[in-house]
Image (cartoon, rainbow, N blue to C red; front, side, top):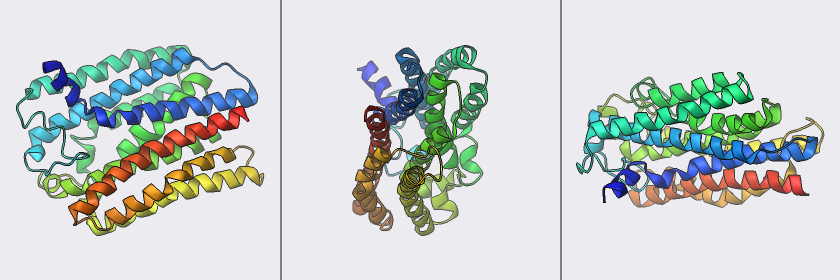
Length: 308
């Protein structure tokens, strides 16, 4: 029973994000090897995924700890996508246990990062340091300085994709940067929409998320614009490659990611009716699917481009 509680504390339903981030970064590298030559290292891919997973667990657990200590988790209206795990308010674990769980998860990821810096290149170090700052300081500090959603968008969105790509190629390239931008926007929006039900409780704890600073109405507009920007970004870089504007943008097969657009429209419609929980919660569910499936399909697009 205790093991089940510890597992629930990781918020496993959200850990699928690490899977698709690692998958996408690996697919981009594999595609480039197929195009230009090189050897894809499955061991590096799996180790990078494991390190990313540990970091993600650390983020989730530390967030739970700080939310409980600030009193937020005692006031929020929990949904399947927001409001924490509920483990600490239910006294299933002690706060100190949860804090150590989050810190140990992060510390276990450090040797993996050190190994890749030594084995694959020191250029990886700045990326890892920025990601570490986003992980450790997000809940206790970044959430209180205004527009905190950039931190998970960067640290648990764009940078992991770029980092997984780097450990395969030992380089940062324009096509890889182009490919990681949708992940940054999508993870930014994942946090943004999930903050709507918690806005009142977050505000009492001194947080300055976009729904608090801008109000939910304007934050809903930001969410909608950024969601549509993901699809325009993909279309734009595919067109740029097809027309020769750039040598390498996104391969045409990446347009398969547009299959999630109907889900995105449903999420946008729900976000615009944020005061109605029976509309907002399904929108949050659709948003999770958009975040996961869009990145997964982008990865499939790169695989198809490499095969055909």
